[in-house]
Image: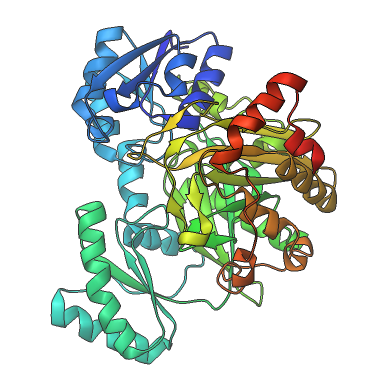
Length: 480
């Protein structure tokens, strides 16, 4: 087992990794930029290294991170998610520097990072994929290929960046002028986001459900799945709410999970990953992509299985076999996760940096919080807007929903705008309560933005803080 692990990330995922590593008796190292020196992950690690002035650029500097790891005597590097987690060059350079990269091998990241190569591998393995194209040619050639594909498959058509990920690099076309306009825009966006303007097309499914399967694979050919998640509630292809297990027919669930294991084997997967699918209105499912990293929503799977996925990641990277077989994996209850961001939903979800004047989190049975903020923390404008992940569980779906409603009602973050009041609307929406949702849910429920933001105004904060200090509790939440 490793003696020292450097975490090449920040925020809640860095803290999440640090906790599991420390439970394994591994010393942990946090990295940070000067513009992020008050971040909580620095306080949770055994030691911390400033890698540059920032903002953002040094967190992405592979050479600086590896130099820091060598300087502190780390054995391994865990990339978390985002940043460098899906960069095969990072994995390769770690290995060349004598460091273990906690994640899949570089070739797997390369193959699954190219959506076209991934589709080819899955097709050859007999796994169903959505009808699509190869990489489109440049300019007029690509436009001609796109028109031919649309004539054959009809609209809607999805335009996707070959190197895309995390919901970025995706556009949808509903007619021919829309297609030609979005082709040009998609190329430009892909070039800026990924340094690669290659795009391809897929037949668009109407109101599909987005399901995914968590898998674990070791270096000895052992692969297990940890069940399904429903990630259909999204905004602009960015997931907002995640649920485990996905509420679909048991026979379909079994087929999706076994297909995910086949997909992992087909691409020679090692470590933790997620195989994603789209499920159409007729319950046909299609391979979408493989995410070659730990995902934000891994917490819901941990809650219903009792397994520590990050712990397994570290053990696999250290050369150990999976600690479980498929028969050891059991599921209990339902878990729901919300990503609480410093954003203003009423203002097109614009980021809301500032100082957290009051932070009072919920607790109680079936409540898990994965956060990286505290009262008095100034949210930098340079980084991701996620403050905390709230995960609740219940023995049944309805119990989990009721618990989510209760926890949101007692969650107070004042001083910045957050997505909490918007989630309160969702959790009381009849369609959500009855699990009538697919990937169109957010855009077909615009009325959910019609709420009164009841978080205390800045003018009331001084009086509210005085009340808290005087009574030892928050009369604002008590009065509700």
